[in-house]
Image 1 (cartoon, rainbow, N blue to C red):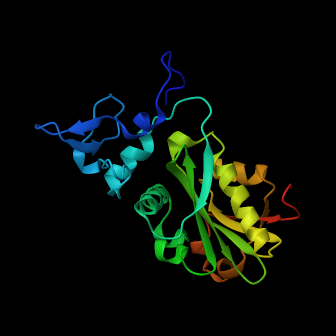
Image 2 (spheres, rainbow, N blue to C red):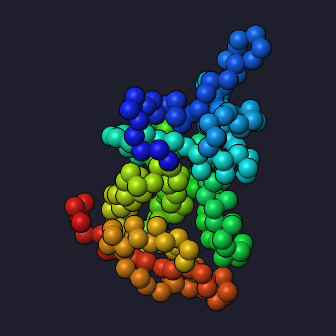
Length: 233
Protein backbone atom coordinates (compact mmCIF):
# COMPACT_ATOMS: atom_id res chain seq x y z
CA UNK A 1 0.00 0.00 0.00
CA UNK A 2 1.45 3.37 -0.96
CA UNK A 3 1.95 5.94 1.78
CA UNK A 4 2.39 9.38 0.22
CA UNK A 5 2.38 10.99 -3.18
CA UNK A 6 4.02 14.24 -4.19
CA UNK A 7 0.85 15.13 -6.09
CA UNK A 8 -1.50 14.07 -3.32
CA UNK A 9 -4.26 11.58 -4.12
CA UNK A 10 -7.96 11.16 -4.62
CA UNK A 11 -9.25 8.46 -2.28
CA UNK A 12 -12.35 7.87 -4.40
CA UNK A 13 -10.24 7.24 -7.50
CA UNK A 14 -7.82 4.99 -5.60
CA UNK A 15 -10.66 2.91 -4.22
CA UNK A 16 -12.43 2.43 -7.52
CA UNK A 17 -9.58 2.46 -9.97
CA UNK A 18 -10.00 3.74 -13.54
CA UNK A 19 -13.34 4.50 -15.12
CA UNK A 20 -13.91 1.99 -17.92
CA UNK A 21 -15.53 3.10 -21.17
CA UNK A 22 -16.76 0.99 -24.05
CA UNK A 23 -15.89 1.44 -27.74
CA UNK A 24 -18.56 4.15 -28.09
CA UNK A 25 -17.26 6.12 -25.14
CA UNK A 26 -20.01 5.21 -22.69
CA UNK A 27 -19.14 4.81 -19.02
CA UNK A 28 -19.14 1.15 -18.01
CA UNK A 29 -18.11 1.51 -14.35
CA UNK A 30 -15.02 1.51 -12.16
CA UNK A 31 -12.52 -1.29 -11.79
CA UNK A 32 -10.17 -1.72 -8.86
CA UNK A 33 -6.57 -1.28 -9.97
CA UNK A 34 -4.30 -4.30 -9.82
CA UNK A 35 -0.80 -4.17 -8.28
CA UNK A 36 0.55 -3.69 -11.80
CA UNK A 37 -1.61 -0.62 -12.31
CA UNK A 38 -3.95 -2.02 -14.98
CA UNK A 39 -7.67 -2.43 -14.65
CA UNK A 40 -8.83 -5.96 -13.91
CA UNK A 41 -11.56 -7.84 -15.71
CA UNK A 42 -14.95 -6.08 -15.86
CA UNK A 43 -16.65 -8.98 -14.06
CA UNK A 44 -15.60 -7.46 -10.77
CA UNK A 45 -16.16 -3.81 -11.60
CA UNK A 46 -18.74 -1.63 -9.93
CA UNK A 47 -21.11 0.70 -11.68
CA UNK A 48 -21.23 4.50 -11.45
CA UNK A 49 -24.32 4.08 -9.27
CA UNK A 50 -22.86 1.35 -7.03
CA UNK A 51 -19.06 0.98 -7.09
CA UNK A 52 -19.12 -1.92 -4.63
CA UNK A 53 -21.48 -4.46 -6.13
CA UNK A 54 -21.57 -8.03 -4.71
CA UNK A 55 -18.45 -9.89 -5.72
CA UNK A 56 -17.55 -13.52 -6.19
CA UNK A 57 -14.83 -15.19 -4.12
CA UNK A 58 -11.97 -14.39 -6.50
CA UNK A 59 -13.10 -10.81 -6.92
CA UNK A 60 -13.34 -10.25 -3.17
CA UNK A 61 -9.82 -11.58 -2.71
CA UNK A 62 -8.51 -9.15 -5.30
CA UNK A 63 -10.45 -6.24 -3.89
CA UNK A 64 -9.50 -6.82 -0.27
CA UNK A 65 -5.84 -6.96 -1.18
CA UNK A 66 -5.56 -4.03 -3.58
CA UNK A 67 -7.54 -1.13 -2.16
CA UNK A 68 -5.15 1.83 -2.19
CA UNK A 69 -6.06 4.41 0.43
CA UNK A 70 -3.96 7.54 0.63
CA UNK A 71 -2.01 8.58 3.66
CA UNK A 72 -3.44 11.47 5.61
CA UNK A 73 -6.62 12.31 7.45
CA UNK A 74 -9.76 10.45 6.41
CA UNK A 75 -13.10 10.59 8.16
CA UNK A 76 -14.30 7.37 9.85
CA UNK A 77 -18.04 6.97 10.27
CA UNK A 78 -19.90 4.04 11.81
CA UNK A 79 -23.49 3.51 10.70
CA UNK A 80 -26.03 0.89 11.56
CA UNK A 81 -26.97 -1.37 8.65
CA UNK A 82 -30.70 -1.87 8.47
CA UNK A 83 -30.70 -4.31 5.57
CA UNK A 84 -28.43 -6.77 3.75
CA UNK A 85 -27.05 -4.32 1.20
CA UNK A 86 -24.49 -5.18 -1.50
CA UNK A 87 -21.80 -3.70 0.73
CA UNK A 88 -22.80 -5.98 3.60
CA UNK A 89 -22.65 -9.02 1.32
CA UNK A 90 -19.21 -7.99 0.10
CA UNK A 91 -17.77 -7.43 3.57
CA UNK A 92 -19.16 -10.63 5.05
CA UNK A 93 -18.09 -12.55 1.94
CA UNK A 94 -14.52 -11.30 2.34
CA UNK A 95 -14.54 -12.17 6.04
CA UNK A 96 -15.83 -15.67 5.29
CA UNK A 97 -13.07 -16.13 2.71
CA UNK A 98 -10.40 -15.11 5.23
CA UNK A 99 -11.70 -17.40 7.96
CA UNK A 100 -12.41 -20.27 5.57
CA UNK A 101 -8.75 -20.31 4.55
CA UNK A 102 -7.64 -20.87 8.15
CA UNK A 103 -10.36 -22.76 10.01
CA UNK A 104 -12.46 -25.85 9.33
CA UNK A 105 -16.20 -25.32 8.99
CA UNK A 106 -16.94 -26.73 12.45
CA UNK A 107 -14.49 -24.21 13.93
CA UNK A 108 -16.25 -21.15 12.49
CA UNK A 109 -19.06 -19.67 14.53
CA UNK A 110 -19.96 -16.45 12.73
CA UNK A 111 -23.54 -15.39 12.22
CA UNK A 112 -25.02 -15.64 8.73
CA UNK A 113 -26.21 -12.51 6.97
CA UNK A 114 -29.81 -13.42 7.79
CA UNK A 115 -28.91 -13.79 11.48
CA UNK A 116 -27.18 -10.39 11.50
CA UNK A 117 -30.57 -8.76 11.03
CA UNK A 118 -32.46 -10.64 13.71
CA UNK A 119 -34.10 -8.44 16.39
CA UNK A 120 -31.45 -9.00 19.09
CA UNK A 121 -28.50 -8.13 16.79
CA UNK A 122 -27.23 -4.71 15.75
CA UNK A 123 -24.86 -4.66 12.78
CA UNK A 124 -22.65 -1.77 11.70
CA UNK A 125 -20.65 -0.74 8.65
CA UNK A 126 -17.51 1.38 8.96
CA UNK A 127 -16.72 3.93 6.26
CA UNK A 128 -13.62 5.91 5.35
CA UNK A 129 -14.73 9.05 3.54
CA UNK A 130 -17.94 7.27 2.59
CA UNK A 131 -16.49 3.97 1.41
CA UNK A 132 -17.32 0.73 3.26
CA UNK A 133 -14.09 -0.64 4.74
CA UNK A 134 -15.21 -2.69 7.73
CA UNK A 135 -18.04 -4.11 9.76
CA UNK A 136 -18.97 -5.45 13.16
CA UNK A 137 -22.00 -6.29 15.21
CA UNK A 138 -23.29 -7.00 18.68
CA UNK A 139 -25.77 -9.65 19.77
CA UNK A 140 -27.69 -8.84 22.95
CA UNK A 141 -28.57 -11.68 25.31
CA UNK A 142 -30.19 -11.80 28.74
CA UNK A 143 -27.09 -11.19 30.84
CA UNK A 144 -24.40 -10.13 28.37
CA UNK A 145 -23.72 -8.85 24.87
CA UNK A 146 -21.40 -10.47 22.32
CA UNK A 147 -19.21 -8.96 19.59
CA UNK A 148 -19.95 -10.47 16.18
CA UNK A 149 -18.46 -10.44 12.67
CA UNK A 150 -15.65 -7.91 13.16
CA UNK A 151 -13.71 -7.20 9.98
CA UNK A 152 -11.57 -4.45 8.47
CA UNK A 153 -10.42 -4.59 4.86
CA UNK A 154 -6.61 -4.99 4.72
CA UNK A 155 -5.89 -1.68 3.00
CA UNK A 156 -7.83 0.23 5.69
CA UNK A 157 -6.07 -1.32 8.67
CA UNK A 158 -3.98 0.82 10.96
CA UNK A 159 -6.39 3.76 10.63
CA UNK A 160 -8.52 3.16 13.72
CA UNK A 161 -11.41 1.45 11.95
CA UNK A 162 -11.51 -1.55 14.28
CA UNK A 163 -11.31 0.66 17.37
CA UNK A 164 -14.12 2.86 16.08
CA UNK A 165 -16.29 -0.20 15.47
CA UNK A 166 -15.60 -1.55 18.95
CA UNK A 167 -16.43 1.79 20.55
CA UNK A 168 -19.79 1.82 18.78
CA UNK A 169 -20.43 -1.79 19.76
CA UNK A 170 -19.58 -1.05 23.39
CA UNK A 171 -21.92 1.95 23.40
CA UNK A 172 -24.68 -0.18 21.87
CA UNK A 173 -24.22 -2.83 24.57
CA UNK A 174 -24.38 -0.19 27.31
CA UNK A 175 -27.47 1.31 25.72
CA UNK A 176 -29.11 -2.12 25.88
CA UNK A 177 -28.38 -2.25 29.62
CA UNK A 178 -25.55 -4.80 29.42
CA UNK A 179 -22.42 -4.40 31.53
CA UNK A 180 -20.60 -7.46 30.18
CA UNK A 181 -19.32 -7.67 26.60
CA UNK A 182 -17.92 -11.02 25.43
CA UNK A 183 -16.47 -12.40 22.24
CA UNK A 184 -15.09 -15.47 20.53
CA UNK A 185 -12.22 -15.24 18.07
CA UNK A 186 -9.72 -17.59 16.46
CA UNK A 187 -6.15 -18.30 17.50
CA UNK A 188 -4.87 -17.07 14.12
CA UNK A 189 -6.50 -13.63 14.39
CA UNK A 190 -3.53 -11.96 16.06
CA UNK A 191 -4.33 -8.41 14.93
CA UNK A 192 -7.86 -8.71 16.28
CA UNK A 193 -6.64 -10.20 19.55
CA UNK A 194 -4.24 -7.29 20.00
CA UNK A 195 -7.07 -4.83 19.44
CA UNK A 196 -9.31 -6.57 21.96
CA UNK A 197 -6.58 -6.64 24.59
CA UNK A 198 -5.82 -2.94 24.08
CA UNK A 199 -9.51 -2.20 24.52
CA UNK A 200 -9.54 -3.93 27.90
CA UNK A 201 -10.83 -7.41 27.04
CA UNK A 202 -9.46 -10.21 29.19
CA UNK A 203 -9.34 -13.98 28.53
CA UNK A 204 -12.08 -16.21 29.90
CA UNK A 205 -13.47 -19.66 29.26
CA UNK A 206 -16.18 -20.66 26.77
CA UNK A 207 -19.57 -19.09 27.47
CA UNK A 208 -23.14 -19.51 26.30
CA UNK A 209 -23.52 -21.98 23.43
CA UNK A 210 -19.75 -22.41 23.08
CA UNK A 211 -19.59 -24.06 26.51
CA UNK A 212 -21.80 -26.89 25.24
CA UNK A 213 -19.94 -27.49 21.99
CA UNK A 214 -17.68 -30.50 21.40
CA UNK A 215 -14.04 -29.77 22.19
CA UNK A 216 -13.04 -30.06 18.53
CA UNK A 217 -15.40 -27.20 17.64
CA UNK A 218 -13.65 -24.73 19.94
CA UNK A 219 -10.07 -26.01 19.91
CA UNK A 220 -9.02 -23.01 17.79
CA UNK A 221 -11.21 -20.55 19.69
CA UNK A 222 -10.22 -17.94 22.25
CA UNK A 223 -12.75 -16.22 24.49
CA UNK A 224 -12.61 -12.74 25.96
CA UNK A 225 -14.72 -10.53 28.21
CA UNK A 226 -14.85 -6.88 29.16
CA UNK A 227 -16.72 -5.16 31.97
CA UNK A 228 -18.39 -2.01 30.62
CA UNK A 229 -18.32 0.66 33.30
CA UNK A 230 -18.80 3.97 31.54
CA UNK A 231 -18.64 5.52 28.10
CA UNK A 232 -15.10 6.74 28.86
CA UNK A 233 -13.47 3.47 29.94
